[in-house]
Length: 115
Length: 111
Image (tube, one colour):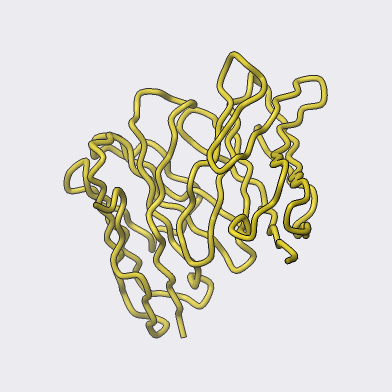
């Protein structure tokens, strides 16, 4: 069974469109994250949710809106897609409550290409 | 602010040779340090982490890292490289539940 899964794996779309990426974890974790990995492989956190509540919100354009319907799911909706949004987006989860020592478990990534 | 610096964006070693990937950190508080590996077209997988206690940390696949406070380093090593070790390696430091990653080192194994 996949611990952290994301759909879709690949997403190709036109500028200006709105798209969503879904993430689910079956580890029973309380905390979930979204990371963006750019073309140079640089990884940066975007958002973090703990028990459906937003706890980390980096300086991400408000075109990006995370939604956590329950603690096992964290979806990422992107409005008005721009060329610069092209990247690989990773979902991750951790036990939560362990603070800085928690291991984060990553999904396989979603490669978004904006044309 | 906490950050990590990975020296060398690309490292090539011969199969069977020692692997050494360098990571230096800056942190205003005792650091919690991680090494993750990313195989092609996959997500990140934890190799090992240092929280407290023993400064030599052993991880999966024969990797280990040593926390050296005096040198602010957390270098990753493996005595004998295998072809399957070819991947991207990321060092990270943790603050609260936020991981800050280095820029990554691509490890190539020469047959």
